[in-house]
Image 1: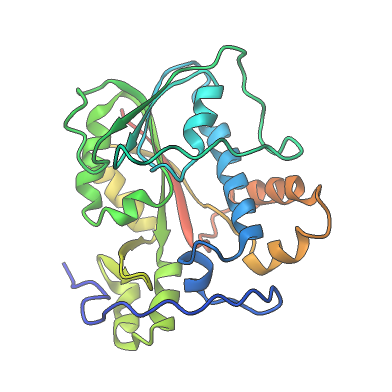
Image 2 (image 1 turned 120 degrees about the vertical axis):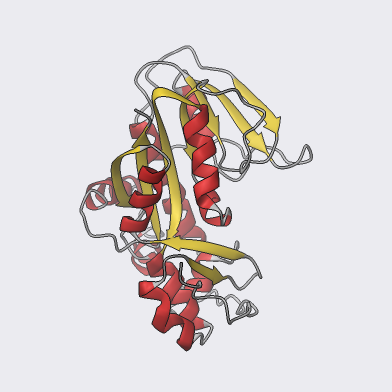
Length: 282
């Protein structure tokens, strides 16, 4: 295995946030600073909500959510009739409130009877507290598997707790984002090796490390743990500047942008900063 592209570099400080929407923001400002690009993140999570609504099984089942309290998908799954176990890293953390739907950009819940939500404190990287084959679906969104640098071990656990025929939905950082962050931090030697690295680990401005994937690498990892890949798509294709320019002018634009994004993401062009994948356990 080749060394990661981040092995010789350290994290840099995050740049101050410029609130001028006309200025082009850097990747770190866009994707590593929580209070920047509020219009874009409203759009991003609306897209994520619609993608999850499309992915959820037709029949009520048991879903395990590993995506952290910041992810609002657990409530979406409960509203669709599923029983959801969501892992919290600490008893002090609470789930985010459900995302308010705007202009019906995501399908309404299919059932009048909601499922149950069960928060459980645990480590999303080690699922030893759960028996084998007990979940119909596992959602690992919000980049959680990119923050688990030993992604293979986490996916092995996901495959173990899925029942035969169960599915997983996951979102990871792409090499597109990783290379942009390396360039911004002037890690030019590391950047030159990034496209050919077997494992690409990239420092973020906040000091954390993320693992970035190509579509081919993500497909290989899923196959190696015994899962069958259904599809890989970019989470979003539309640029942040485009979304910020269009959203403030018309409150009805969000639904149209989300629908446009869902159609664009079905292409085979993996240009997004995050990759979304669905896989099935045989």
